[in-house]
Image (cartoon, one colour):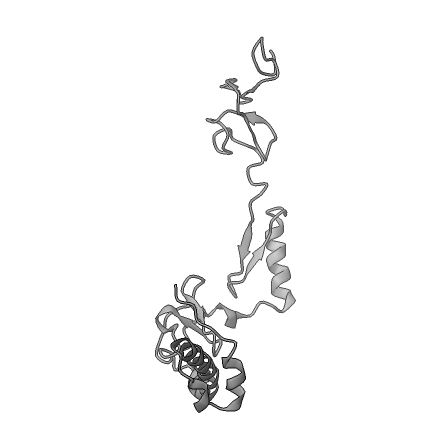
Length: 192
């Protein structure tokens, strides 16, 4: 039997290597596991019963004591017990770790998961989605440094007002300290 193609084009296409199919396919698929060629219908691992279907999969064993996940990719199943024993003896297995993290806000008992955890940008506290804004979790850094926030925001406001005043033709810089006078001359605001 020919490898593929037709009489006119013998190198075009390949026959499906599934035992029941042998269909000539002009756009064949090569299995990443067993390296055989298949048609569209038999291209998935499940449809052609690929013996190496788990070659790219990641396997994880979860410790029952501390709920830590340990990757076992590329190892035999018999090694899972040895891996868990090694983990237990390593000192990293702590039953206190089994307790799932909860929201840091007082009286909130929301369990933090990957999808509902937010880290506050100002105080770096892990909170649930309900308390993600600084006002909702009484953020310490946001309330303790209003002068710093006002100073940085105030500088921007001064620059903006100076630029706006220069567009309007008013000399707003007369009322401001000398440090902002030099900067206000180079600023401009464009309206689109």
